[in-house]
Image (cartoon, rainbow, N blue to C red; front, side, top):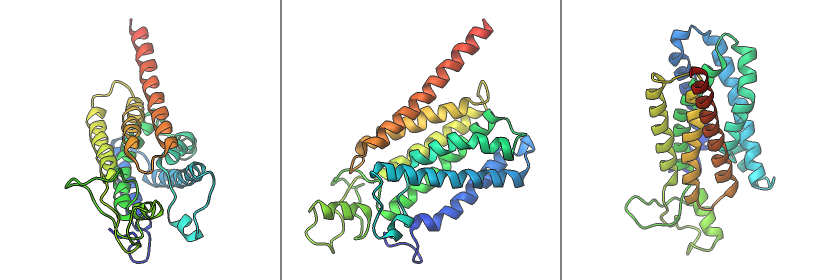
Length: 257
């Protein structure tokens, strides 16, 4: 755990480029039989990534009532929230795809993007472990972890007067970030398996919204400190995915009757 960063940089800064490269390669290889133009696919994914980061930052500021971290370097190093990134991808992804990669059908694009996001966010959760953020309640089980001074959980516990001295590491807590990671990884593997059995293009994207954000909404119950906006947003996105699956199922069944 390196709450003060690796090589003088925040863990997310260190890993964001490898994660982005992984996502781009995964996306292109997954669609290799669709004969898409790799150059345009790279531009598309990088553009979506920019909007995702902006969305994550804006959502984080919204959750904090637009209070900026001090010093400003702390704001630049972190303060990102997943729901904002996902909402930005949902809103701007289709528009960017239409302009940059029009030859790929929108439903199929969303399917593969959903699977890619699962694996990329599983990797992002490792930076949560490095930074000591996205943790659960205090616990004493063998799987509970203590984080070094400077980590987010240490700072929260220090503010709450739970530590005897500022030089002490945090009290052991549930490593909730690993549960988030397992959920993203497991759902990504399931969606890859189900993709070969899908009934229509777009089904994987809807399943992603329902399963991934439904699981995230459940896990948000254990986050300390609890952030209601994160759980509400996750459950809302999951409900949209479920509604989409039900509506498509109804119309497909009606048309086949």
